[in-house]
Image 1 (tube, helix red, strand yellow):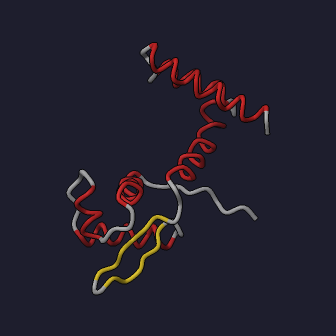
Image 2 (cartoon, one colour):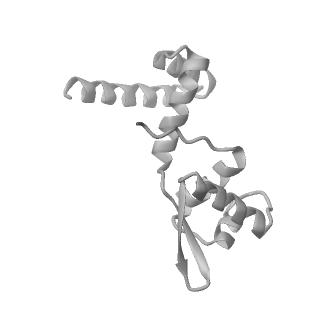
Length: 128
């Protein structure tokens, strides 16, 4: 059976981003890496919740614990895109790309970058 797609609350995603950016980190390091000022115990509770969900693991380093992400940013991003694709874009990747182009890629340079990346993916799929 396929494991369920990861689902993160906004706060959990903040902590996951800190772990993805910095790698294994103590609670204090994660606390310092996020923009919101959260209590140490709040950060620890969220990390423990993420650990219970299987998205984070820890190891003891002296008296501290180093937490690390067990799911990559790329895996989480892919899961989130799959979750968004059906309800918002009717399951159509082209509708998603069109929306991104309209919303974010406002400059010709960004649109050219997207076109280049799409051409690369097409070539990869044709040779697979």
